[in-house]
Length: 429
Image: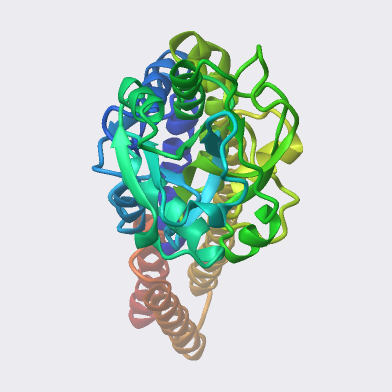
């Protein structure tokens, strides 16, 4: 009975697996969008729309958070499945990288003929920072750089301004430099260079950070980068020659507990949607795969993403179906094994019952010619067979035998009737 129940449960599980295999259920992934009004928010929103067209079974639900640090907290607390994190901010302890969405250069833009040739020269001067959703985070990077060269943050005054106001501040010589964090392409750094160029009618310069590698060792979220010629302006080129600097990365991060096949699916969706996203926002062209060779990553690559990047293009649904297919095979094999065990048990029981029936018929046949002492012996044999059969039935449980109680009852009654009739016949002699 227990074996039959287990086989039934496995059969139902197999049917459920087959149903899932035939039509996978829809998945919903909650992802933070970055600060409201930011370019990253537009990128995530565009990704959600593109993913709805490419993979309608996986629904990406944007979740707005007040800032980048709030996004990290949301992932740490399990309120979202994915979050956009900037590498210079404290990372969530359970975060693992799925994709790099953007790489922003730390740019200290100087007007032509500026006396500032090193970070330490900013002491006692005023610096302008582009106003925007991440201005406070950018200001903290400046504080970290100043602290590295021994300049207290309060020794450098800073103002936050829009591009036009930046140009006016430079033109009126109210600021010595513009500190911007932006991509090599449209963004805050390019706008800062353009503002300084308009204000001075000259060619701005980019302060080289020769300490970039050492700063990276102290602040792993700030990565060394070589800014190529003309990265922020083509003619005249800014910078005029390649410059060492630092960069921060915006990363799409998943919780460590996310299944490998789901993380791989998200990575595949991001990379395959890159072309569609570029039509909506130019920042999509900067999406890149994380570095699998980084030995000391601040946010390590999710194992599912690493497997996807290593083994090639296998979609979430292909992988899921493989798991379900293999699981269905295992369930089928286990179910078949249990079914064989149940069938074998039934056959053994049926064989025992047939032997019992033949023994009862033999007793009835022997009773036809037996004398009184032999009848007593046959009666004892009958009681023994009946007692043994009842004991086996009690041990076997309440399952009904293959031959059925009716046939056994008829065989027992037949043997008893034969013994009784022979006794009556002997009594008349």
